[in-house]
Image (tube, rainbow, N blue to C red; front, side, top):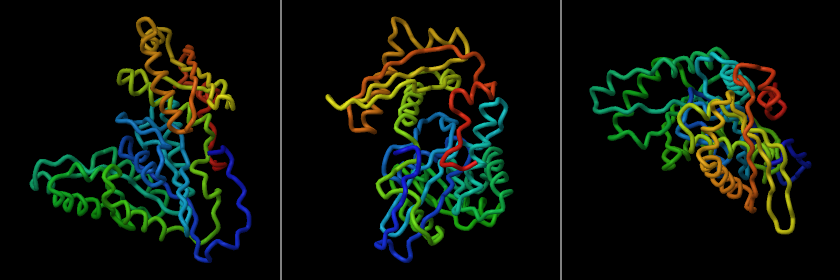
Length: 328
C-alpha cells in the first residue's frame, strides 16, 4: 500500500486487450461508497461506518484482474457544504469525479412499505443535488442502486428504477448489495468494459495508493465513530506522529494525536478514568493489526486544536489538503 505508485516494468505477458483506468464512486453521504470499494477490492481498505461523512479524503483502491486494473476512487459524500471542512470534502468528491473513465453515481434504495409507496417515491434533495453536480461534468453516468438487500419484495425496485431513469439518461442502472454480493458480478463486468485499453498503473499486488501510516490514522478515526456520540467524531482529526516497523518481535509501534476543537471535548474523549480512550485504542489497534497482519502497539494523545474544522490553514497542517494519487 505504498504512498507512491510503483513503477510497472514492461511486461510482454500483458494481454493485448488489457484494460486499465479510473472509476469514480460518487454520491451523497452514507450511500455505501466505501463498502462497495471494499467489496470490489476484496479487502477492508476504506473506513465504512453507519455515520454519514465518515470519508473525508479521496482514497484509491486498486482492483486488478488478469486482463484489467480498475483504480477505484472512493470520494467523500456530495452534500451541502457550510464549514471549511465540508467544502473541502465536496471539492474532493468533484475532483475525484473529473478525471475518471467510468463514473458511478451511488444512490441507496428507499425503504418502501408497499407497491403504492413505491409508485409515489421520488429521490430526495441530497440525491438530486449529487446527480446535478455530476451531470454538470458532462460524463456518462452509471447509476448504482445500493443496499437492495433491504427491499422486500424485490419487485418494489422497478418503480424506483423507472423514476431514476426518467431523470437522466444513465449509461446503465445497476442494483447491487455489497453485503450479500447481489449484482456485484454484473457491476464488475460493466466497469471492466468501460475501461480504456492500456497498461496497469500500479503493481498487481498493490491495493491502495495510500501509505500504511495513513490507513492507521483512518482506523483510529473509525474507532472514534464507534465509541463516541453522534457529534464528537466530526470534530476530531487524527495525525500519526510516528510509525515504526519493529522486526524482532515483528510489530508496529504507532504514536498518534487525536485533535479536538474545544477544551470541553477533551474529557469526553478521554472518559472517566481514561476508559473511553482506552477502548478506542484497543479497537483501533485490533483494526490496524487486522490490516497489516502484525502486532501493534498504539499510543494515543489528545490535543486541542481550536476550530480546526473552520480554518483551512489548520486543516492543511493536519494533512487534509493533500491530493490523492498525484491528481489535482
